[in-house]
Image (cartoon, rainbow, N blue to C red):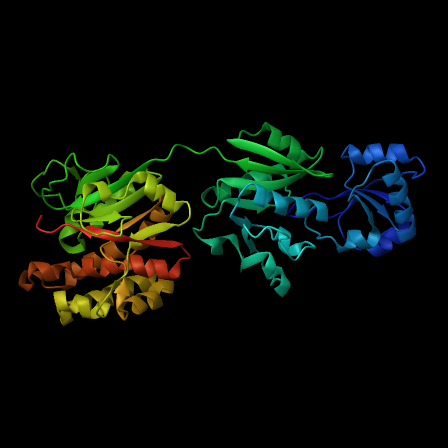
Length: 480
């Protein structure tokens, strides 16, 4: 018998001719555990209720109907009683019954789960093609195979792999019944996708016993006649949020910013110590600040902090949820507001800038020759390390809009992924630019051309990654 990658081989009781059963079942996995005498109705019912068998299969439809009628007289009804044709119609990969599917869909609404990732396309392979009375939950699924068009009534969007989901978060993720080791591996893999995982475990199965030994923040069950849906919330550390305020000079902000805001001196290496945290400690690129601007502080945050969520703003620019963009300390984005937004979005950025072509803006500040040299070098290094992003870079440079000033708030895994991408090429590209450009004859502002290109990279990266973006107003402080 074949053990599937997902779930367990179903244990069956067979009523009927075994040779006829084997001729029709083909290579469908199963474990035959007995051929009961259906005349002993109480014994068969007791055995099914124990969870020792997943199905009581009848080769003949008429015999199945007669047994169901007699069982109902005893007050027993179960989706475990099926015909051979029904058994053959079930998805091969895992234990399945319609009752469990209906109960789960209704429970999703009852628990106010608004977004669900169906990792194993459970609903797509099931018999239902509607979410019944649950319009609350948006379900997306992963399936290598195209879905029936009508299944879009349940699955609003389909990905071919978990990798395609990227950084998107859901209220819950659904996985089908698995062997314990496989369950643990997937549960851990989904840590950045959802804090809650839903799975099914048959009565008396290995997975049911395994789940009883695991520690979860919350563990509730929804009983069915064949087992239970387990709603499992992982143990998570307390939220550690910090918003870094980058500066290159003294500011009036000391003691006036929210507690979670921390001023960082970008380019402090070789400069006067302003008394702030500097980007020249630990693993750093502080001395490149003359050419990369605030990106050196971004690198320091990536290499030297462990915050679970973090933000990046500037000493003259702060996010606000207010409509009025006039600066006021009491309107600065709070940690509570930021984290609440990140429950439904993946990243907070400044409202998009719309103006001149981006390449023209850089040329206006740095000149045509330096801009062309910097662009050629950056494209060379992206081609070597991140070739899939070349089209996105051209799109941004030829666009009249982008997200300005490297301003953002996001979760750690997204921040790490962005920094890993950015610093895979921008440092080496900057060093090559410094070797090829005659900086002695270049005004200080034009030496920052690589920094201007780096400022556009957040937009380049967002174009290629499937993130839910929240744009906020930015308060700008003049004359400091």
